[in-house]
Amino acid sequence: MWRNIASNALTFLVVLVFLAGGVLIWAQQEYSDAGPLAQPICVTVQRGSNMRRVSDELVSQGAVSSGTLFRLGADYAEKSAQLKAGSYLVPERSSMSEITEIVTKGGASTCGTEVVYRVGINQADVQVRELDPVSGRFEDVIEFNPADGTAPEQYDAVKQKPDTRFRVALAEGVTSWQVVNELREVDVLEGDVIDIPAEGTLAPDSYEIQPGDTLASVIGRMQEAQELILANAWANRAPDLPLKTPEEALVLASIVEKETGIPSEREQVAAVFVNRLNTGMRLQTDPTVIYGITNGEGILGRGLRRSELDASTPYNTYVIAGLPPTPIANPGRASILAALNPDTADYVYFVAKTLDPADGHVFAETLAEHNANVAAYRRLEAERANQ
Image 1 (cartoon, rainbow, N blue to C red):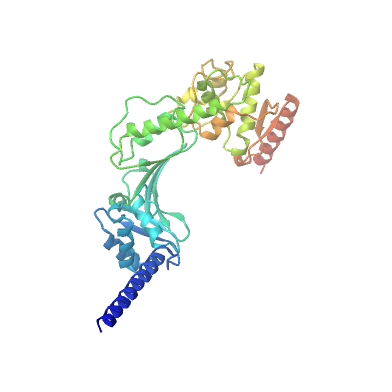
Image 2 (image 1 turned 90 degrees about the vertical axis):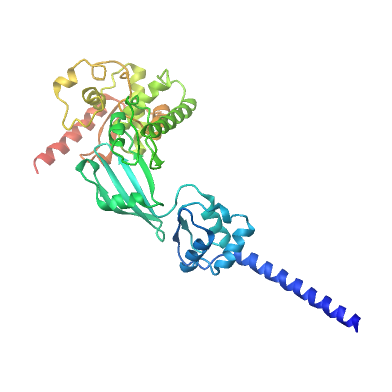
């Protein structure tokens, strides 16, 4: 009898072990397999939250089939104590394992609301945008110019949300004065800078910021980024350029930046100026003359006068030989690369192709070709005047 009892107990224990093993395998598979989410969602992790609250939200949004299994899996992976506050995009069919990684990895929020402080050539504005998780695109909620006065109430409310992201975006070709002047209006930044950074030393790009960051620290990041871009471009420059230093390359890049907004023709514009420098021709570019008048402080807002084109100033490239003494704006990476790796064509002239700046320029190697191109442009002007 005891032998039968022992045998039955052993059998029961074996069954329990097999059942437990089967449950464990099933749980691991459920945790790792694609989840039930039919379309992407945003999941918000509040400061001080815990896995139970997060799992409840995931269940309510249909992202996981079992909040308990999600928590057990996070515990087993030793991630339950690693939650990071923020708003995160969870792709469709994400597994519990993938979602756990998303909400514990940290870094910048990938979903929710963001405020973008844009510093443009002609004006600055503030955009509040919301990510549509389904399309993956940000949709504008509000947009305003801080120079117009009081900010909308909705903007003030968004700033207080714990998962709101903040960015500063510099357009290519802005001046250092414009950058500092506009960043002083960004009300989530603190402090000030005494001196305007040297022209050309700020990298146009998008920079993630946090409320409480100092203006000086953000400027410092922009300077470090531009130093790195310039150093890498200089190290990989084309041979035999008429540029002695990286600083001269930055000057040329700023001229290229201001002469064209068409990405595909930056190298051609750079070739014109490189060829002129090589042959001793004057650069004869209006943006340098304009900078000599404004010092980069705002927009001229009118055409150049004959007296200004004839004036002998350090920035009047119709009068001086070679490059002006400093950059005339902050060039972007593409213009820096173009200045140091220009087109190999023998272009020395260019003029607008049509009356629409978006159509770019037509280039010429000889004065005769250039005169023909200019004549064609003048005819377009005359046709418009007669309409």
